[in-house]
Length: 79
Image 1 (cartoon, rainbow, N blue to C red):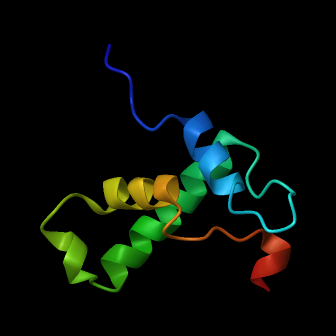
Image 2 (cartoon, rainbow, N blue to C red; image 1 turned 180 degrees about the vertical axis):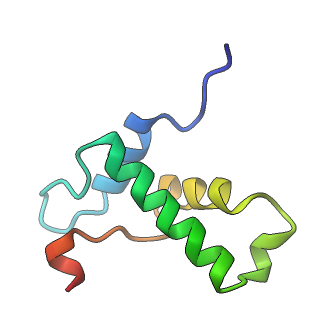
Image 3 (spheres, rainbow, N blue to C red; image 1 turned 60 degrees about the horizontal axis):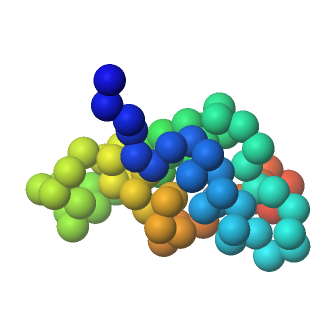
């Protein structure tokens, strides 16, 4: 069985490293899945053409979360 990269732990660590106040942004696998799905929907809905030919929207979203090129906000920060 092939391992998936990045792992949930890698993504959680990467996302939480962008926290400005030191509090974790994401604490569960479920939150990682929701964040990746929301970003993938944004890519598809907005027709971000720079991504369309390279790879699938979900793969792009996961890579962006791992690299920290997009920011995940806590619910209280998003309001």
